[in-house]
Image (cartoon, rainbow, N blue to C red; front, side):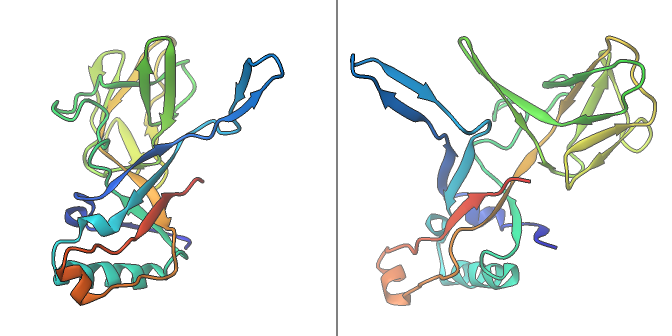
Length: 210
């Protein structure tokens, strides 16, 4: 039970600051050229939950959530308001948003994922924490019915088809998702006077990996 399937209050995460981090190792050669490499296949997201606090009631809610997770002990779900859908933020979800696999007549399980493409670069991010009730699925261009044609594991992001898709059939999905995170501190320091004067406490949150 190192992860609690509970979302950090979305109204508090709305004003947070954060995003993805990459790790790049750069070696400068004697001729001035560089060699660049990365030990990370996937980016890791960081956030500051303190910036979303607007009242003393918000602080009380934060402290209760912090204590309920035991500080850094248990992970939880986090809504990244800048990136929580399989499509653009202004669009409605469609089952054709993302391709998550291709049928072969045997395989029945597929991992939800989201592709980020820009120019020649493309990154495919595994989606581990879909929001239950938001997942739309298509097989070969035809919409599928959750509970009849497929099932979703909200704890892993794995889609299970009741019947294997035919060879070459594209499996597509649209969904909302959360980020699996934990607090990156075992201490929260809050001064009521400082908060009322506009000084926000720092509450770092970091993405966890399976």
